[in-house]
Amino acid sequence: MPKQIVFPIVTFLHDLFTAIWVGGLITLGVTVLPSAKKVLGMGPETKRLMDAIQRRLSILIYISIAGLILTGLLLSNRSPSFQGLFHFGDVYSTLLSVKHILVLVMIAVALYRSLVLGRSRKPLGPTQEKVKAGLLFLNIGLGIGVLLLSAICAALSAGVSLT
Image (cartoon, rainbow, N blue to C red; front, side):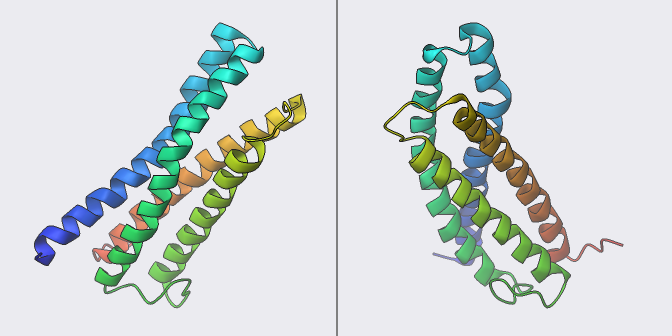
């Protein structure tokens, strides 16, 4: 398949996986969670609803993480500015490395929320629920940071000066 077709498809998939993951986080934290608490209160119905939504979103997030890793590797091979994973030799590489570190933290947070807190056999206490919500908002902030760094890297890769 010619590069003129492959690169746009890979870029589209990378953007789609990002939108699913970060968009899902923002939607969950800013819309669904507050709405569920407002309508249902803080009772067991809210917890069951949020757990069901998280289980469904987790599947999409796991697919998105795998897709982001694959498409990210393919995209990095195309960029002439790419000097290697976790390379800090210039501004572009440094920002890209920081972005990748943030993504790794996001993955760790997502796995902890889903696999440790989300699958606890006993009901979570109020403190654990607050930790779970706090980690959701941490990942929202990290996701926004990743998007910002991606935009800056894209501008640098296109030759746009930041000064």
